Amino acid sequence: MKNISLFIIVLISLIINSCKNDPVAPPLTATSGNLVVTSNPSGAAIYLQGNFTGRYTPDTLKNVAFGSYAVKLKFNNTLDSTFNFEVKAGGVTNISIDLTNSVASLIIDSDPRGCEIYLNGAPSNKITPDTIKFINIGRNTLTLIKDKLVLDSVINVNKGQNNIFLNYNGTAIITSTPSGAKIIIDGVNTNKVTPDSVKMMNGSHKLELSTSDYYFATQISIKPGGIIMLDHSFIAPGNISVNSYPAGANIWLDGTNTGKTTPTVLQSINIGSHTIVLNKANYVADTINVIVLGSQTINVGSSLLASASLQEFGPVTLYYGSGLTISQPNALVLSTGVSSTFSSLITDSVDLVATYYYIESAEYYYTGRYTYFYQTVTGTNNLYDGVPSVDISSGNWSQELNYSNTSYFFIYDTDHHFSKMIITEKGGSGTTSSPYYIKVKWLYNKVAGDKRFQ
Image (cartoon, rainbow, N blue to C red; front, side, top):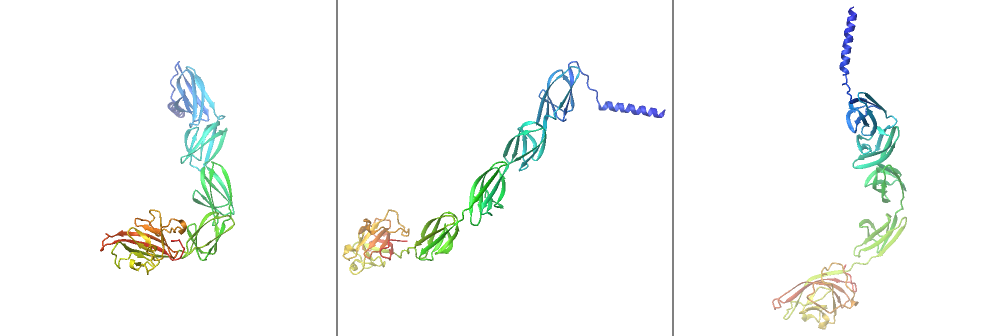
């Protein structure tokens, strides 16, 4: 009897607890009904007439006014399926939707990894590699974004599991003849040598191949997931055989001292245009332009011209006007830089004389020595600019030169020597104590007939 009483107490307790866990649904009214929604797979968000109900399958929408409704089930913003149903007043409408034939999953990976995943324009809040479930079967748009780079792909999704791999990168397979060339991409050494392959982001890149003897550069275009093949055959560099007379000239190549002297052969010179300069003491530097061809030796040579034998004089003061004394010379010997007075013109080897307005040839004073002057372009006042004299046969020479000249001028004397002179100063008041004067400075070429001043 005691056991029967205990059994009755336990049974009553279970009934009470059961009632607490399963509250009684409100009674249906004549104008509403309940909508029970289940799906396979479960977990779909339930939308009624386009509005999210806040519930997920399986669940019951209670006291729904009778009438026709559009029920939409949605998974993670990727699957969107809509079905039309009618809710009857005072009854229960059961909706059971099997989505297994219209949904799929995507396993998405990329190179590089860490890309944000967008499906049909909506963010998935996932990054590669990852899996997205409940995808509509059929045509979908997959977008991956990383470091402002966007890669779009239209994919065809099949039922079940789909594996998708999208590649930002492309691959360049690079070979060369001869092999062993360093592979440099966008100025960065890849630490690889030909033949080898290099993976790089899509877009345009500068490719350089370099060895101790060869160099090649070009632009390459990489497409996502693409493969390009580049094979370059280097042309062997050439040689330059350099000679000069006299020998022993220092050789400069493209502005760099080679440390070698003529005669010699410059080896392994890159194909193309080059400039050689030969320098030797007491000789004028010579410049030679040469084009080097592959696997050939180019011969160049030069007969070097001896430097001009120049002597610099001055400034020397020459006076002009009346009443000059022995200490106020007005005449000049170009070869020695000695100045003379008028009284000694007959005995001295005078080349020119200073007068009131001109520097004149000594021939005017019956010395038997003629001198000619050539006026240069106004503003050329640098004696050391290396410009040579014009030829005496040019026809523009005169036996006098006005003091107003401010540029240097050339002189040709009886001994067939050329000089390059400039008036550096003019002054004096024309009195006995302060006669007019000019100061002259010049370069004298000691080699007869040599017009050079370099």
